[in-house]
Amino acid sequence: MGQNMKILVAVKRVVDHNVKIRIKSDSQSVDKDNVRMSMNPFCKHALEEAVQIKESGKADEVVAVCVGSKKASDVLLTALAMGADRAILVQSDAELETLVIAKLLQKIVEQEKPDLVLMGKQSVDIDASQTPQMLAGLLDWGQATFVCKIGIDGKKLTVTREVDYGLQELSLNLPAVISADLGLNKPRNVALPMVMRAKKKPLNIFQVADFEVDISSRLKIEKISEPPTRSGGKNITSIDELVDEIKIISDKLEMVK
Amino acid sequence: MSILILAEYNENILSSSTSRLVGAAKKIGGEIDVLIVGDDVKNLAQQLAKIAGVNKVLLANDRVFKHQKADVLCKILKDIIIPYSHFFASSNSVGKAVIPRLAAELDFMPISDVMFIHSKNKFDRPIYAGNAIETISTKEKKILATIRSSAFVPVEQGNDAKIENVKIGEIKSKVEFIKSTNVNSDKVDLSTAAIVVAGGQAFESKENFQMLYELADVLNAGVGATRAAVDLGFAPNEMQIGVSGKIIAPELYIAIGISGALQHLAGISGAKKIIAINSDADAPMMKQADVALVGDLKTILPELIKKLAQ
Image 1 (cartoon, rainbow over the protein chains, first blue to last red):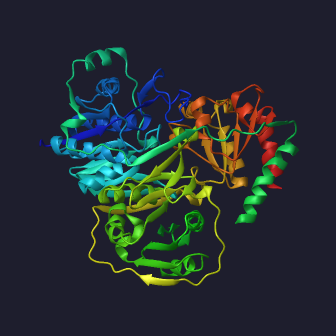
Image 2: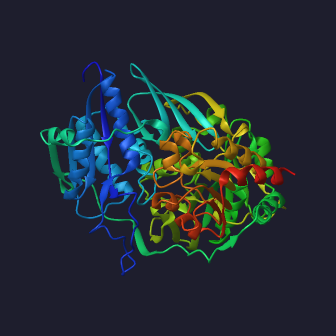
Image 3: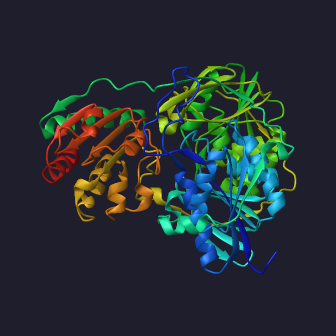
């Protein structure tokens, strides 16, 4: 380990957040075959932060890791273009549960020995918000979720978390797992020359089977269904009607209090 | 079957979500216990004992539990949850931090954000920001889950459950608390607010956004913005509603000058009632809304605020 930190950033490939999802006719999954896929937006914030930490001279190396299909190497290419030094793909053709992914990431952490793991606070597909906390638990490391600010002083981190009632500031020693929220930074756009350069950076590919992790699912997806549709709306023409429509709800809420 | 619920509170005030989680647990049946973990929370344990249907209240009262740090909570929860078939916490910042960590430490696969309970081991949860609902079943021996409390009805008061102290050994956290800022004192939290008002590009400036804050004040509402409004600098990042921002499910959502980009609509799909104000009657948001008013926000908002304040 050098003087400075080594940062591991886990990223996920998801249906692009601008795409309208379509549930397949078997009601078992969401169509991912012919839709635009991209890096989970929250993972972008995690990666951007790692790259900024390196650019500030406080980290020596940023390694991006993704557990996913062979196609997920496009997301790792984005990570490399954004500034990661190298990338690791843990290839799995099956969709894996968060606990399995956390266990695989634990293996990668044991190999790579990073000082800090940065991840997105949740992925915009299954919205579980579980993997970072699971990884921290498996490693018995300190964790801070939903982080919107990170300060580094040697081996100590000061982080600001977005919590239900406001902001919470914590300090924790490295190693640690941090999950990134939206306010952390503004991820850079990658221009084509950056992508071209990224293609020259190392990408290591492992198979899930290379790790001794049981990848079987514990949960069974019974079905995936459309949310209840909205009943037809009505048009109003005056502010008085608007006031009435608002008061129906606000008065009711007042009563519940 | 026996269910343990982690009580939610902030600064010595119980959240109604605990009573809602008891309501959720009743759908499964069996004994329901409530656990409260904190520093100086004995009085809250007494309030919890009054919730109808609670068998007993477990009280873990110690200085180390102040600020409810995830690693510390996991350390005592490992032992406390042994006798239970289910352990529920609400999908708030404590529950979300604790449940997955605890589950992984015990090698259980948890379930996030339960919004409907079919049976003791079959649940519905939203995926893709609520654009699809996933029904899942689990065979795990212990079911750890976070529950979307707003989806369940609180139970009545009227009980005198016994309070039991939890034995606490030596526990250390890897995390040190520095300070917290209660944004809530002057601003309502967007992700849990019962009413949310939000503005889009049509506001044209940061100054005009001020009207939105005034409206929010009158309604005690959270304030949000579209990605476009955030990108234009009208509102800060943390106000962004949508798939790449906050996902909200308020009782009432008032969308003002918002055309309704796909990723924004996905972020509000959980809203119970939507009112939209827009100069363009054909905007997608106006089609989604339960109530739509066509007009210029700059003339409508001042009058609306005045009339609501009366």
